[in-house]
Image (cartoon, rainbow, N blue to C red; front, side, top):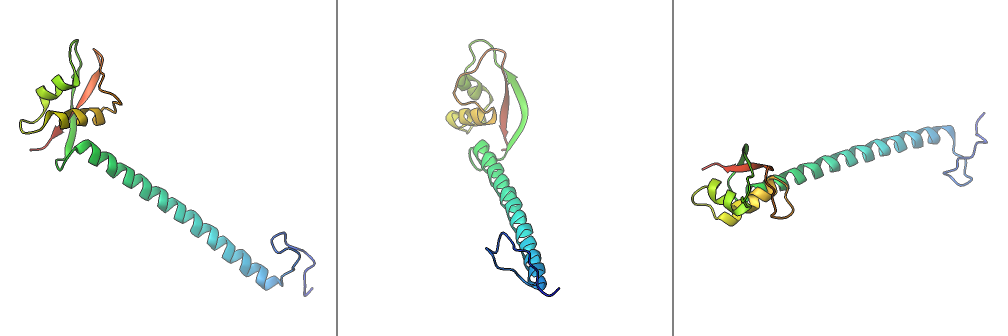
Length: 124
């Protein structure tokens, strides 16, 4: 049989010889694989950029952050008092308060007694 009577829904009534149908399927499959790989690559790049953004936000400057110490909030503690007690000498207290909020994912500056906070430790 030289020509097929099968009509593809994609060709709107045009029938293709067997060779071109096979090449169409191959190129269409390659296009789908390329499209899938492109989406995976874009997702990977987006996650990487978002991760870098978090690192830069937490660092609050050029100094890297080490997340290794914790403090338990007691009655009367504020972010400011914790920052004054634990920040490096030369650092502005406001920067350390913002680093505390970012490290602990606090939307506002309120903390409660008994809450455990991770302290950002800046290398000197």
